[in-house]
Length: 140
Image (tube, rainbow, N blue to C red):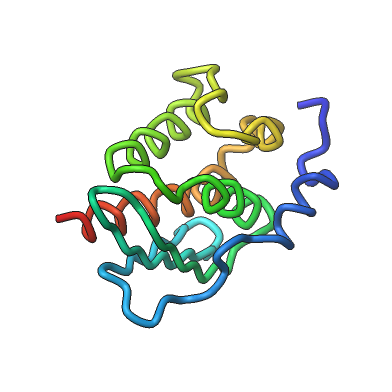
């Protein structure tokens, strides 16, 4: 925990969330909320041929939740619902200490300082949880 929790890279990501708009006609929409801090992420998804082709986000979260949603949104297009669920599960495993691997998703190393702050984990997971569930529903 020697690195600052809110560093300039996290703050930069928090202000540059890709796909930060709701879709007009999504195949699925999912809202996830952190009961700990009240952060919310709503994800809209459109799938085609088993892959995410369009995403829309409404992110109302702390800087860590915003940064995590930005990282997720920046690399989610083109992935399958299964790949997105795997990323969600691997992020959860990392945050809980069950894994030390962050190489499964580009840029997640910036969030490593937050691992020691369990009260922030729910907000960090929101974007991954919302888009994985929206993709699953849209693909069904």
